[in-house]
Length: 76
Image (cartoon, rainbow, N blue to C red; front, side, top):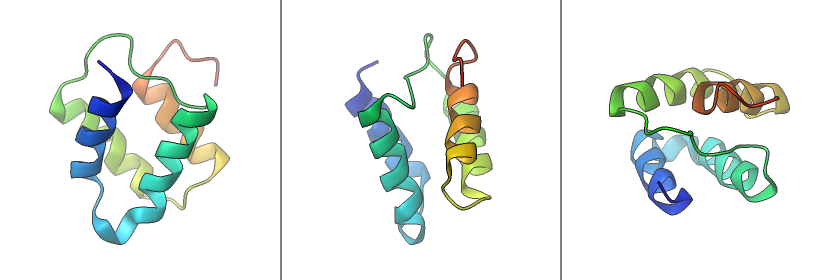
């Protein structure tokens, strides 16, 4: 799945009040800190990963945790 399509799905899951979280996700994909899942994620799997990410302030640690949810083979 292209990153743009994945980001569109994520945008629908991140409330506007959490724009800072979404911006951090976009930035992290841009710098390579996040990678798209190697296999497609269901809407439920993606929603759970994003919900966990939204629980904390955007940080290196929260991005790394999201990265592990998106791609379990990630070295982060």
